[in-house]
Length: 197
Image 1 (cartoon, one colour):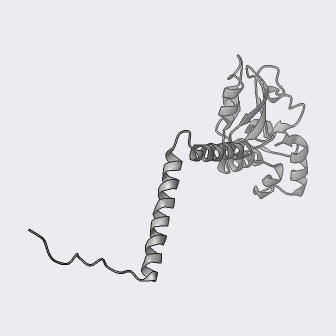
Image 2 (cartoon, helix red, strand yellow):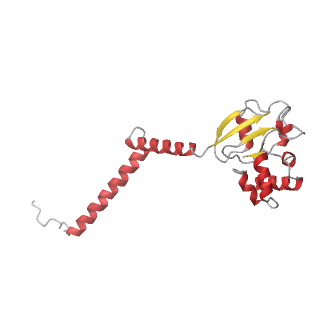
Image 3 (cartoon, one colour):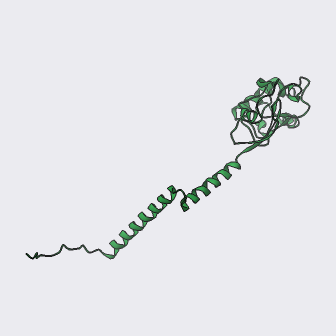
């Protein structure tokens, strides 16, 4: 028995419709290819991800701080730490406190700044001397007592400096101390000779 009849009509598309469908298909293929490449292990996309991770790592290295840890620690020296690290991180990197270290004489919570020297007071260190420091005191770790020993700085101003430093998460420059109430130009000159960043 023969089947007679007409075949269903195939819809006709205009040139504009064909271009729109082609553009959508190409976009889907591009998105799919990018998605496949981003998840692939040994694919070219993996190489791109590796390059991006390497670039991020190099960018992170430029945001590190370099500090000198001295005094009563097991391994004094110069160390690179991530930005935002605290004095306690620098002490740990230097092997921790040495025997006889005056742990309460240093602000372990202070944020480190690039180029800072952290001096952990202990027997025989300049920072522990009651006769006064033989050299500049570290701004990042100076105690109220150490600041009070600097000529022209009294206990009230010393306390204000420590509070200002703690409120700002550390200081990267002695010049920032001109924002402390009661420190004028002559005091700033004294601080520049008695302190180091």
